[in-house]
Length: 628
Image (cartoon, rainbow, N blue to C red; front, side, top):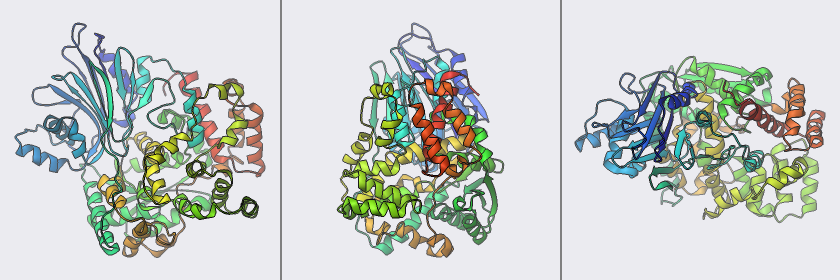
């Protein structure tokens, strides 16, 4: 795993080595083991192109000869690469048979020769997670690519003179770019908890979307999509699908065990990570290193489930408990995430990665199982909503009053039915943070006037691209293009890279995802039972308690923390004079929101977390404009 950065221009502007050095210095956490810089030999004002590439390396494969930037035999093509290509040995053999010669054992060099062989089409043959930049000196072209589902990040900035790119926004900011907040992105962030690609929180800086490539030459910049998951169904029996899935998942885990350093696995005690532990144990034997995180609040802790799996497979198991004082690291987290980030589970994710890195530099996880195998309650809700939407609204109001404080999930579900007739606006209310009615009272008149589009259109546009008959499957497809890459994968990438740890996700292998998408929805959800196929596959792999338990997700007790240990911190930060003077929000509504939460009348924990994250981000990236 690594950090990459670079600068390319066709305007006769010299790329300074010191500039690239500053960029990769901000990425040292992503690659503490090695650093390298390439400056094109014809880097002078009279040359048609000036290029600089920078790299920070976390050494996982080919520890001795994998230095980057790396070139081909005649130094006409250069690459900086972040990620892992799991089928690189197979690709290497194919390229050797075609006459290519290798000087290293790295997957990076495989990409170089594959590019020579396939040009831009090389990305279609790569199996893994990646973000890379290739400078082709003969074609005078810069080529950027990001993996199919968005495991590895890639951001860029373009002006009239050059294109600057990096793994993280903070590296781009080392070029003296004006830090101007994109106000529309704040609206998206408060609605969904993240700023969707291709936009970022800062004007001018964009994210290359997952499954896309970018080319930049003297004619300008072009972006195109090279992968979209297909839901074309295959003819297969349930028994055949279970056997085939086990084979594909086992292969996916096996490929992710290729490493020249020790590996471990994140074990939450949920079905997905437990299956990864089971398959990894069968491949490696006993002694697999497992790592779990929990809370003092029993309602939020899954440690007891993780222990059962660890005991079954005799793993070397370690645990960490997150306490409210974890928010002392809020400044550090916000700096690492580059943008405001509304998912509070980034706190335990960070600590889990920090603990794991003390023992291994690589960890597998169970990310991606929910989006492929119908794992979220909201998918079941989409199926049920097609029938319940015909209920009289007075009846829904009665049900809400009866369920108040008893079931938060059902409460949110029924509110969506009550307030929205449009399927995808309702879905947005289930997955979002601040709803439109919340924002009307929260936003100042000036801030409202600065906003343009309807943020609900983000999900609506994604939904319109889906032609699946099942509401649950449509929601899964939307999540694969939104929530998965913009929230979950950002959370995991930043939490692990902040601790120089590589995370590998067998369920996010595109072969696994494409196979799952090809199966009938009835295999994955039967009689409204979630993850039916996975649970059937795991019958002989996992304890019954794991298969029968209620899904918790990575819930964080911020609601309790903001009423106790962190109460004063929230009031002081959000009602601070500087915070109010930004002009985004009404002070009286901020105070009312805090008061309502602390009194126990409402649970605004997620909203308070988002507002805190936004304010701390401003203090770090806008007010002080300094690095940590």
